[in-house]
Image (tube, rainbow, N blue to C red):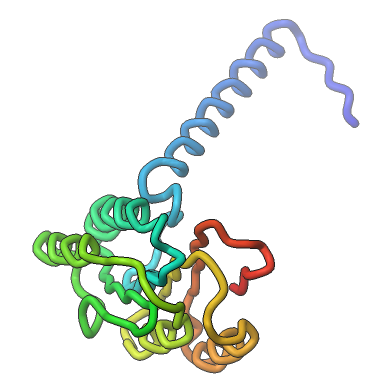
Amino acid sequence: MRHLQLKPGELLEYQEQCEKVLVRYIKRLQWLLSGSRRLFGTIVHDKSVILIDTSGSMNDYMPEVKKELAALVWEQLFKFRSSFNFIRFSDRCEKWRDQVQEPTEENCHKAIAWLTSLTAHGNTCTLDALREAFSDQAVNAIYLITDGKPDNSTTLVLDEVRKMNYIRHLSINTISFNCDEKYYFF
C-alpha cells in the first residue's frame, strides 16, 4: 500500500491518463476479439498448415468453421502475406495442396472454394492429419481445429507429436469447438 499526496490538478491529470489507458485497452480487446482473431488469435507464423476436423461430430459446426476460415484467409493470411495450406481429416486426410502456398489472390479464392465444399462425416484421424502436416518441411506452425477426442489414444497422439516435433519445434495450436474438458490434449 502506498500513500500518495496529490494536488487537485495532479489528481485530475492522473484520472485523465487512467481513462486514456482504459480506452486504449478496450480498443485493443475489441480488435483482438474481432473477425478471425476471435477464433484463431493472431497468426504470427509465415508458413502455417491448418488441420480441419471434418468428422461426423463436427456437422453442427461446419457452417461456422467455413465462415471463420474464409475470414482467416482474407483478414490474416492474405493481408499479412502468410503462406498456408489446409488439411481436412475424418476417416482419411485430404490436403488442399501438397505444400504451403503463397497467399496470392488466386490461391485465396481457390482455398475458399475448397473450404466451401467440406462436409462432415466419419471418424477423427487426428494423428494421421498431424503426420501429414509434419511432412511439409516448409511449415513452421500447425493449427488444429477439432471438437474432441481423436480416434487414437490421446497419449499416443501426444507421444507421436512429441517425437515428430523433437527437432522441428513447430508451434502447434489447438482450436476447440464444444470440447468436453477431459478431451483437451494440446
